[in-house]
Length: 155
Image (cartoon, rainbow, N blue to C red; front, top):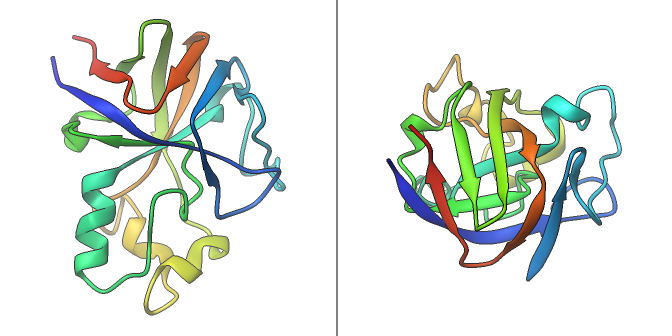
């Protein structure tokens, strides 16, 4: 079982970047206090949460991209998790209460182009760069999450 931590919790009233919050309730439709502007491509029960890896962000920064936690619109920036295990079907325990299931890889959009040195967010496209995509998840069990909470991918 892979385990890590919630490095940052990110929310906004709509759009990106999302900004850090100390704690949040994970509800069936996502983080309470978070909103999406484009409900055709974001949100809903199967896209309730967006997750990304701190280690992937740091590696992208090493390539010269100005990305940072929350810039790509992820609700949860996770650290210490084997990102290759975070794939559709994976169930992830967040803290003591919340349980989520990864539903799919996200499609990068033009709204996050500011986070890339060349303005090309396809660096996060799963088909073009496997293992570098953010993921969407559905909420199986709501609960409260806090920065530093443990994260475990369940077997």
